[in-house]
Length: 78
Image (spheres, rainbow, N blue to C red):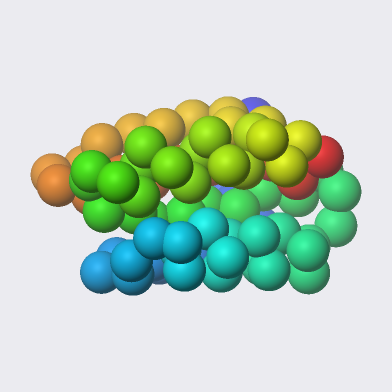
């Protein structure tokens, strides 16, 4: 599943906290249960905070991959 093409992609490079989580949450609210969202985040505070907050909302992190100084996380909407 984690290698599947995500249903949506959200690029949040250079977006400060907490706006990156707010945008992620709003995008997930538009999606159907079971769909996946790939989010591109900066290193540092965004990658520390967004996955934790997404899990607290009840969604599942399927994958987190660092590419250069950015992160791609794959979220499954629960």
